[in-house]
Image (cartoon, rainbow, N blue to C red; front, side, top):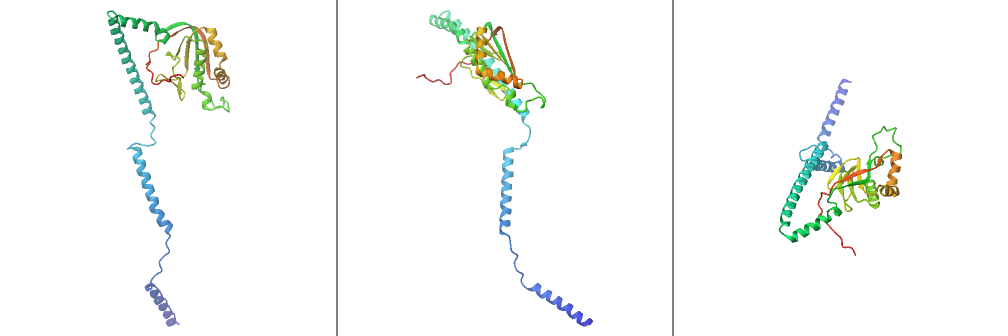
Length: 268
């Protein structure tokens, strides 16, 4: 029995050895996976390269608000320096024109003509009775104090609100007007960037103060008749926006910006 059992064991060993010498069947490969791996690797490499190029050595998620604030402040300083330089040059031109006017009659005649048009053009400061309108954003409030249907746009002053007041005052016969103590003309553009006001290249934050010289009764009547102003007053009641209208003696500064035309259309 022991011999027979040993022979059976050797037979198993020989069969296993013979099976090992036989050629093995090739394993079935998965062509989809073998092709997908290089494609995924190539896509990942392209993504990493694009990210590195875009970042330019900096962190993509870095908070750049301080840099933006500094850039805005630098541009404001440059604008202020340019305005001072322009005022100096205008003074020099006026001084030389005055000197020539004493000996040149044509220049004197043109100077007198220009002086007569300065007030109508807005280049002289004016004072008199008028109306002051101040628009302001809604004050910060807790979430439970804010109307449930209110959005962020409902709580700030928009470009259309400022334009509604300005147009109403012009329609009411305003002789001169200023916004944020800057003289504006009928051709001045009023634009809003976010909740800030862009006027003649300068940015202002609320509250927005609009001053107009004219008959106070007529100006107030024009404000009361304006559809845009009425809608803003409704928002004042609903969302606590700021609207203040006062009558007093006011002063409007002279227009100090460029009068050069960038474009014009010939009326037909």
